[in-house]
Image (tube, rainbow, N blue to C red; front, side):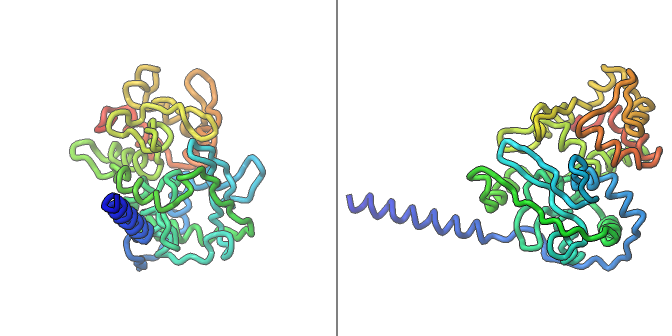
Length: 299
């Protein structure tokens, strides 16, 4: 009996030490300043392409631009998009450029905590130093708004942020934005936008019980479980072609929100167009649709 007790006690000690080690385990790369001058206009364009405006502005309550407060109801609890204005207390006005870069590309907060993957940082991992510098320059022009960010209301055990370290180890995947030989400049630009900044797969790919994308088998094949009960249709090349879409009609829809049938995008996709893709150049919208309408790896 004493032997069993000692074994059980030893196991408990090992488990406690392992948990303490996991909680203390640092994530992310060391902070490093990017010695490049950012371009405000390029950064503003990048912010539009990346969906920053639509995700961090509470249009339903006439909120200030990028002041956060958008509600995301998930199977794990409720998240609220944070304040990204230059307010030093409630926004990112007290951040350094290096902290901003790590948050964008690695999903790590200035305090070293992991962000929930509702923030699409996995898609931004390949942003170049110049792109990050441009984004940083653009965000420095956002007027401060003293609106506190609401903390996540997550159910146990999902409210334990150290558990996100395990999630990252198991499911975090690099974005597939690298150029593919033989596909051409337009197709590869579309790949960069769809699989990177545009993070289309965040909504248009189904997820498993842990909230990770089923990228290997169902990339861009739609999701019935978006925050707030919304659904996202499949946008893989076979489905799009089967529904009569082509490059021109899809590019037009990304500019206007109007489908070939005369219908209009609603819900989140309507906001994506209104505050995002409608601001892109015609060349970039054509690149996106060229990539989506063509067979590609993972599609």
